[in-house]
Amino acid sequence: MSILSWNCHRLGHRRAILALKDLVRVHKLIILFLCETWYDVRKANEVCSMIGYDGGFVVKNEGRCGGIAFFGRELFDC
Image (cartoon, rainbow, N blue to C red; front, side, top):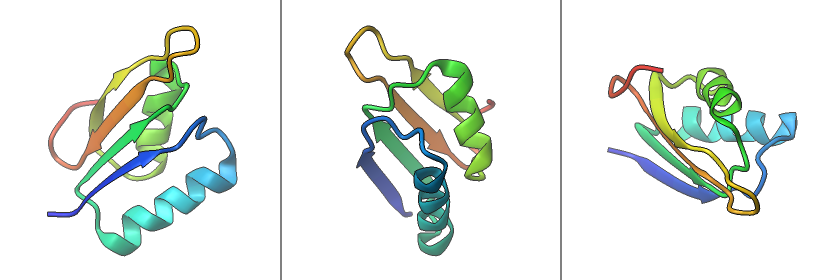
């Protein structure tokens, strides 16, 4: 099982999302944990779909607290 945990600090740039998508593909990651996403739930679910995961669990950012996202394959419903 391959897992990646990444402190992405505002993973909002399209290039960063594409780089993350490549990491997921190359390393065949089953689980991806992102911290400091600064995402709302809608945006996190968009990223989940963009990088090819089936679903996940998101804790939205609150003020300057960054938020977290946990994505997985065949584990969750979006």
